[in-house]
Length: 446
Image (cartoon, rainbow, N blue to C red; front, side, top):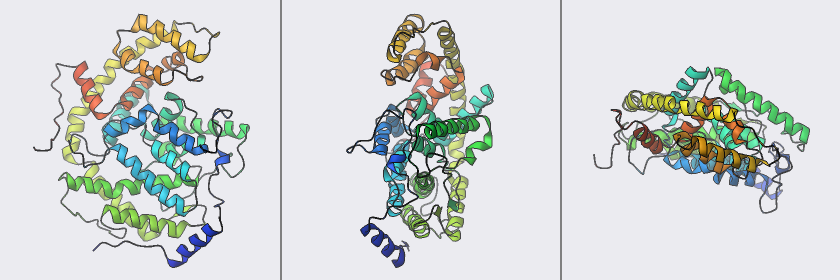
């Protein structure tokens, strides 16, 4: 029988009384503490508060559209009833905001982190992430992680001046690492004092160093700790959102028997129970504290349930055989094919002299015109470089030539990670029409 736990009468009364008294959580991130790279831009307005602006920057980001055709866990199925990444980020946002509202945290910051946390995810879910990491590492010795790449999308590829607090939360959302307590790191500028220009510069300098550490040291990605309690809320909510939902989807596809029980069902057995009970336990034991906590029995069940999902779902033989036997060689061929074009574009950028008399949009426009004449026949130029240019056409900070002067491998990784599942497959068929590699989707009736 389903069991939905509830908050204790004591905590419920405390929350009600605090709301009546308009109590403010001293551990919440205040809107006035927001830090941006361009501190003189994007001033908060009454009708568009600080972190609401970030929510809107993310939702209007062209990469946000692509969530809807990116795998959450299950690729190769034509089935409208299983989760895509678009639904996942919405579920994370809803769960995190429920927790944040009860704890009197900044819900706008929570929403922005949640909606942006997977925006740099690859096609084909974590299987695609592992493939791209392997190929990228073979070429460069560096590591690819989707959370790090999500920050790159929000901060470098689509330059919209997203705040430090949001970028930090996105970087640190690592939903593969569950903890019994989540305590924010609180660097300078995010500790309750109003943000200054010096603190802002220091925060971004430290963030950039942490990102580079994730590229060069494998363990660094697991060591990232959010600077805000809101980032911690989103981090645990990421796991809560997929834990029961992925099990539900696996059962719907026939990859698991119906009503497959967890070994430890303390947090519940259904998706709805898990979400409710985890939220209740976290609120009950975190209210008024400077960290997020859950009881030991909940943590044990929470951690074990995630490990069971790995065993039963995430490395399922039926899916892995397609990923390894078909998608991986496809990815390798696309990477090598386009890498040559990226290197060709880099050489062109090296031979081009920028005209500093023009502002950045005009410099980029003139550089693009040159490329159109000399590289217009290149597939990468038409299908990716022109897209990046269009996205940043009015940016005063995005330098197209500088972007093309970066490592050609980074440009190819940017392109592949941006693809949806369908685009990846169509691209492969276009580039390699005579290949024997082919993906068969399981349809609705067969």
